[in-house]
Image 1 (cartoon, helix red, strand yellow):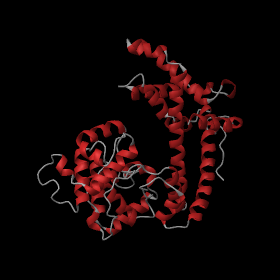
Image 2 (tube, rainbow, N blue to C red):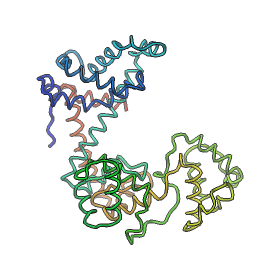
Image 3 (cartoon, rainbow, N blue to C red):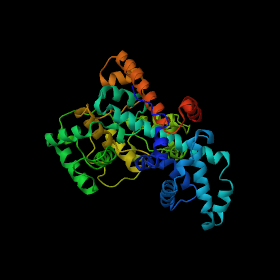
Image 4 (cartoon, rainbow, N blue to C red):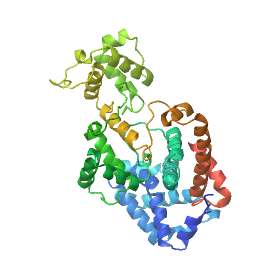
Length: 392
């Protein structure tokens, strides 16, 4: 069982345990930073640094108690007072913003940042918990609850990093050369890069190199656009651009809506059935090395809309890494996750997926309770989790 620490981080910090205070500041740096960015866009990082230095030096943590309310309430109240103390240095619009600083909507912003940070902390602890556990169970959990929206790696998509890097080095493939090159250029540690660092390095490789030549594996030859192929945040704007360029085709395929489903269906149909080069200008010999008509069309769409469509090469590279290192990398799903799709991808029975998810959810709840217990009095843990759930 995961031991519940019951307010332990607060208690240790109140005893002036410097490491506990530093951990507290580190854990909740991000929600404080995001909130401060609303008022100090250019020097928010310096302001937050100053806030946490004063938080530690002035022993503000000693003021926290159950009778005075939750730690989150204490932290945001202290932060607001700190920001207001600095408002004499700011004029104009900043003063108007500060006048409304304690409005419910402002406090709700902080609560949202707090939740985002809490979920990130729990995800990292879930990841570390599986470092010595069953990777298959971890992969099932991540694929179902955190399925990727991109071919690019997140830190939690990789596990057992030292073993992973050791295996790559032993194989002495192009990937090993690319890794060493990117590590050297990035300035990261060549001995033991962190998960965040190695994910950034791998993403640089996905985007900049063709690692397909180092294996004999057949990557699925599909150029259709799937859920991991998009950078789009404004589907309406993207749809309007497409309607201008492909007006005749939009009529041919009876596409008149601006939502995501219609856009994706329309693009996949013209990928399969049309010659997109006829509708645009592309550099000479740009598609000379295309492998098929669909490949050519995909290359043209990526060229025309780099702000909306991810490179197919990144998806190919990710797939190759998943094939050759299935014990270290959480696979991408090219569709919305279901028990059946995960079972099919991992080649395990559906009942195994169901059983694994139940066990993983229990572990996740234990970690969540433990994390919340670090800053909430024990008798209020359930109430706090319910509150956060409602905010979500």
